[in-house]
Length: 305
Image (cartoon, rainbow, N blue to C red; front, side, top):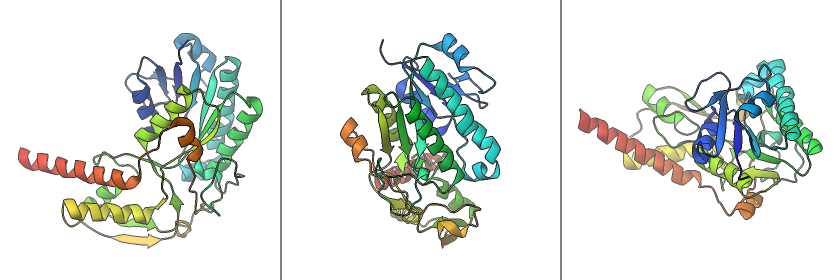
């Protein structure tokens, strides 16, 4: 049969965009406790995946996106996050494999220690933070259980370009208008990816029948400070002076976290690009889009008044 996808954890940021990209004809998406139109509730370990597949299947692939993904929450609640991110996820993988469904596991750039950057898929992981350790535990489990029947996607940080929704870059617009202080790290480097490109990349890997481990991020490394300065320059060039500029530039490990954050978690995406023919957009073009959309929203509001 043609590929048909299950998205476990479809109500999250990436899951919503992936479900929209695939469409209801090709996928069934689940939510845990935040109801979302067109999705079905599935709350493991209370709900059984076998029962859900019997009711809504068949499926060829399943995206395992469900996770406690806030790094601080994972530290503060190690038992709870381990239950979701490791124990329950392994149980889901067991069921998927037993049903002949290929698992597509969403991993993270946080599996690396950030000592060298420009990581490729064959580089040895060495996670510093709990979340990265949990992701690596599932990666290793999946490779051991199904060495030839899995996809592992190590995602970088995602963002959107709707200026009225708070994501990685647009959150600073809200801070400017509120006059809030911004604590902005100058040293941590990563390869941010637009959420629509992340969704397209996840779909392409399965649609092309690929297996193995892939890095999926933007084509160029950025620091938060570079993103913030780029947003400021675009705002001033197209709209005017920023409403406020209360910025504390600092290092990522100046925040007093109980675990040391990795500094350079940039990942090379050459393997993904070569396999799919798709190169995600860079953040500089996304910043321009954010400001253009914001300028349009401001103009429309002024006309309405």
